[in-house]
Each structure stands twice: as structure tokens, then as C-alpha cells.
Length: 165
Length: 342
Image 1: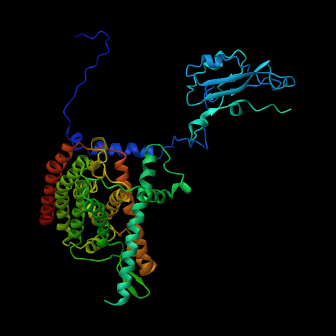
Image 2: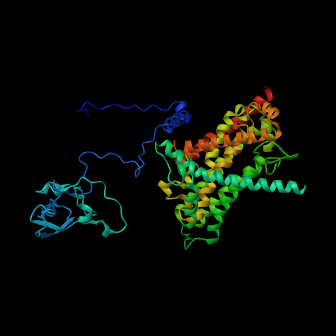
Image 3: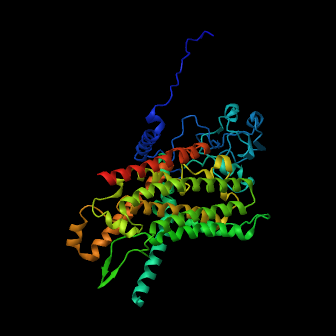
């Protein structure tokens, strides 16, 4: 059949000549190739000591943000939990009491906010859904642990450190 | 034999035994490092500086692992297999001359456990016993993969022993002796046998790779076809013994190759060194030269392992019977003709 793409290549397979059949020259050239690699710089990154730089839009561990006055931005609207395809986010909302204005920005806040890191697929939809710019996946890789219950991260691990006064 | 001689021999035996174990231990570490360097990696570097305690950790792990003897396995033979493998690997070092005679405080000491006049035959006997460890272990496991691995090991060793023996015959026609000490002495200075027997050496090293079950001839433990080969059912230190035996075999066969073909402890300019450094220091330099050559060969074994893929089984048999044996016979004829007419 005629080739329509014009990319067809005819490959000839000639019988091997004596040196090719002797196999030794091929072995020697193979040995020289591996010897070149022997003196090459290793490409390994020794992980815990050195870390590779993440790309700018890398999505890692979540963090709950504070505003410029150090108040928590989250208002416990639940849009992140609703948008989450993996059902990883749950929260319990609470009303802000008098005297807590410097802690929470809105009148409603998340008393409990939990993300199950084993369920999370790091898609970033919570980040997109959030109307208050309260959640971002800007952290590191989620570290390893021994028990499943330890992968359910509460506010203690998620909320940003308070601003220094 | 005086008491002093017996003590010296005993010390020598212990030293050589310890050296072959330590070399085998650190061969496992070297293998992993060398493999890493060939693949642009770093290799083990966590246990101790540069990972030099890695073999100790591996050994400790082997001892602490659960020891399993399969229900339907023959328990006695299952244990006898690895024991035989490590035993035959260790006794090969007895006839290898590690250096010239050394003079320590008036005593003249041979740096060789025993100089029997059929040293080459002894080596061959021990090497061919080595396959029994693999065969017994594979058969006693009562597992088809182990059995196939054992059968492969047996037929491969039998095939390659023939061409190995034939390539040695050509060498023996030149040396006229079977004693390894005399063969080493004849290669004084630069008169290394590899210069007179290049083809014989090539045949010998190919067969040595096959006899030690190293890549490209490691079909008895071919993972893709046979799970783990003859040691599929083994765990704990019995597995460790099999792996260890392979590395000791590699060390011993390197030493045999160095002694037979690469001049043993001889090096150019050794007479000058002997005259200037005296009869105590010069043999020590010879031992260092010997071990350097042996380590280079061990490195070569590893280099080949991380370069060449495994043979197919029919190719292995073709190479052994249709190429190596005719070449070895041609080498004998050639050596005879050259020896007679030139």
C-alpha cells in the first residue's frame, strides 16, 4: 500500500558481519558507555537535607489565612466543603462573641475546621471556591505519619501563625 | 614440622579466612555503590560516613529476620544447601599464593596456606563442588521455580566447566606445572601469562562469569522468569549465605585469574624493590599488588554486571558448546604448534 503520510521508512536488516557476530566489540562499546556514566555527577537530590524547588503553582498542604490585622479570614460558609470532590473538608460554624473582634474578621467563624489529608486530592477547588480568600494550598508536602487519625488536620495545623504585634 | 610453623600456618589460615569474609562483605557494599555510580546515583550513604557500615546493618538484618523452612521441604537438605555453598566458597582460597616468601625475624614464611602440587586441579574440584550447594538447595525447597533455577545452574556449570578446563590445558602446556606457586613464580616481573595466552584468558574469564553465576550468565536466579531462582524459598541467614557465597566465589575466582594469567604478586621492577627494601617489606608490597589486581577484577565483574543484559538460555548453551569449546580446542592446537615449531 502506498504511504499517505510519506513518513514510511524502509528498514533493511542485513545479516550480521563477523565482528557483529563476535559480540565482543559491542560489549566493549557498552562498557565504555557505562564507564562514562561512572564519572558523571549524580543526579540524586538527598531529600531531607536538600529539597527540590517547587513550581510556582504547586499545590501542597492547605493553610487558613489571616487578614492584614491578624484576624482569621474564614467565615465558615462551607463552600470549600461543598466544592471538594473528595469530601475531605468538614467544619463546625460558631458565632463571634463580644471581645473576639480581633480574632475573627466576620461575625461567623469556623470553630472546628478539619481536612482529611488522606482523602484530599490537592485539586485546589476549595481555593477557587473560597469567597474570602481564606484557604490556599501553598504549603509543603504533607508529611508521613503512622496512624490514619493523625492525617486529619485541625485548625491547630492549618491556621497561619498569628502576626507579630 | 615445628610448633612455630604450625602456629604460623594457623594464623595464616585465620587471616585469609577473615580477609575473604571481609572482602565478600564489602563487595556487597561496593556492588551497590558501583551500581549507583554507573546509574548516576549516589548509593547507600546513611549508615556511617559514606555508608561504610551498610554491610554490618545488612548482616544484622539477615540474622534478625524470621527463618522459614517450607512444610514440604526436606529440612536437612534445605539447611545443607547453603552450608555447602558457603563451605566450598571458603575452602578455595587455601592454595592461592598471596605473596612471595616473607622473612620475619629469621623465620621464612610462605604467604600461602598450602602449596599442593596439583593446586589447579584442587581449585577445579572445589569450584565444581560449588554447584551442589545450589542444586541441593533448589531441589530441597520443593518449589518449581527453585528446581528450575537449580537445574539451570547445574547444566550451565557443567557446560562451562569443559571450556574452562580446556582453556587451562593450553596454559598448563606453557607452564608445565599444576602448582599455583610455581605458576606465579614463572611470571616474574613482566612475564605475565596473559601476554602469551590472550585467547585462553578471554575464554577463562567468560567461563568464570558463568561459574560464579554472575551477569550476563545469572540465569539460575533470573528474576523475570524464576521469581528468585534457586533461593526463592530461602530467608534469613540461609539466604545470606547464598548471597555471601556468590561474593566469596567472585573474590576467589578473581584471585585465581590474577594468579594464573595476570602475574599474581609479580610486578615490573620487583627485583629492584627486593634489593632496596629487603625481604620483609618487598613481599608485603607484592601482597598489596596482588590485592590491587584482585580488586580490579572484582570491579570488572561489577562493571560487566551493570552493563550487559542477561543471555537467553539457548544462547547461553550455544555460546558454551558451539563457540567456547571449539575455540578452546583451537587454542590448545595453536599453543602446541607454536610451542613445537617456534
